[in-house]
Amino acid sequence: MLASWAPIYDLAQTLPLASWALCLDMRPAPPSHDPSVEQALRQLRARLSSQTTRFAAILKSAVGLLHATRLVQPPKGGNIRLFHDDEAGALRFLISGEP
Image (cartoon, rainbow, N blue to C red):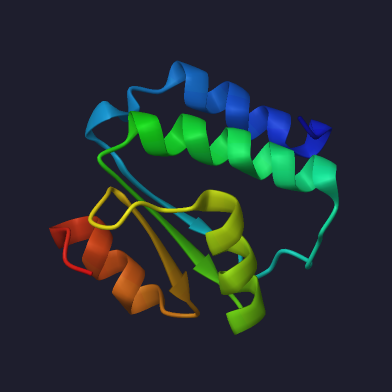
């Protein structure tokens, strides 16, 4: 895993995430197709989405959304949703479960 993601991953190990809904705002993140970044994101997503009630990620561009969808492969009707620059939609999903 990338060193920059380690603190987030380590923190996730210590928090009682079972009752949490979590939003990851990826809009400020630089685009990357680096395999190590992709692997780190897969590991982080697997850890956080399996331990939270709902997990949303907000992406800046449509290309970023497509890339994240390929990496994450969110199941239909599952607890993971990806949003294209739609903070209100992400928050609505996190609070109520509505897409």
